[in-house]
Image 1: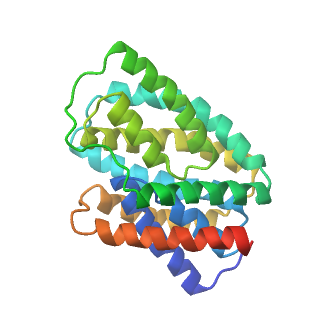
Image 2: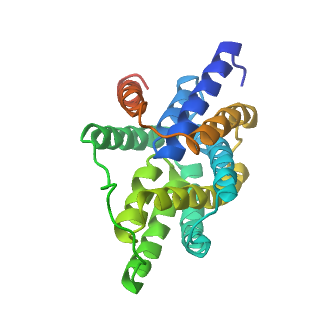
Length: 252
């Protein structure tokens, strides 16, 4: 697929933006998948190709976190092992779904994410930290299988799914939950990428360009806070999501 230089530049910038907000909270794939589709990439292929930048952004973030110490690595691994089977099943569905069906699913998901952003739904940042009980651990690991399925299928909104599980169900503070989220997404996305790569003709060059952008954004997101930029990012997300919903429903 041939793109103009400015289109590659747009993909790179979208990747930087998406990688940054993905590491900080979530929602970056709501930018990367639609922009590939905007440039003519079929939905399922854009969905599969998107796994390359996701791996890149989370890998750079994980390396950053590893240098500063990772809390509860055992819990990260056990949760990831639960997410991987779900991700493989979800990726198999994502690789075989029709373009039309994918576009409708994506439009619905984007509308739900838009509602979530507009209502400012988020976890309480002052929640206390504590060791999860056995029941919380069982619930958290069970929910991780379902979360992995969604992540393998479409990925969009995974930050909004994983953070409540890690924070509300397992009781981790938001900083620890965000670190866990990054590692879990990296590990299950590697398995999903293998499935998509086997099932579809992914656009590796486009994915590589976006991966470079996402990697830079992930590196920045692991070091910076959203204290000054959150309102701008939120506004841009709302505009981008609304425009893409209109395109998917009325101009597909």
